[in-house]
Image (cartoon, rainbow over all chains, first blue to last red):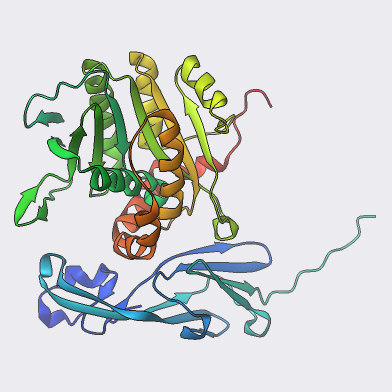
Length: 130
Length: 245
């Protein structure tokens, strides 16, 4: 998640914003889908060109994504804020709804969408109906 | 809720395009591109007490977020802000009533259908549907796959219902889309299919080239739209209708 803006700024309502101009960081759009066996996370990261620019860190309970934007995005007058703003990375940490097994997790990057498939740690058995 | 014409809008048998916030922001992206490419003039706006307290600045001028554009007999309705679930019913009624008053030859809803495997689809398919039989026949004749069965939830569902009640010819063009990400690729394909129904001189090259920039800039509108879609029960689009099963 982008760093929260300091409360002394008097801009607490900005804490839900998807950008942090001080850190040059954007929060990507994302979705989490949970199936019986895995958790699937998809993250939209336009302007990221290479899979080598993406870092995925997993624990049993969290997934943290960092991605470098190929060419720094610069707005001369950013929104109503009207100041220059530059963004050069995405960052987001997900709290996972179930424990996962990081060792068997997979990631792919296609059309600027990063997809993580995180198998659940809980083991499942199929039994025969007699 | 009221619609204001800056000057009297009096086109002959107009085609009216709707770009309202929905899946993948397909309609908004497509209509915004058409307005820019065709150099359509701003001719009116829609406002209501139940809209969010928002104006949008363009070149120093505060503007209404939901505006109307025109060039010849082509009219486009386009919003730059998310619409609350409470506002879409009166908005849909207003749009259809106005389209009827103007003698619209076609009221076109441009939108998306959320598909979970969009990441693997290189060229999203566009489906057509219509409130009248002649337009459905045209859809078939033009080789656009018909949206045979299913549910549609949101502003275009209400426009469709209201169009049926008011006998306004409503065409829906819905592209396979990312459910929760802005989808310029889907918007490009919707425009390509739209051109089969009405002759508009709009290329999609610049839209495709600006795809990533659009995805980046539309993130917050997409997030707010997703929140509103959840409140509207958008997940019903993944259910099967009971009849004919």
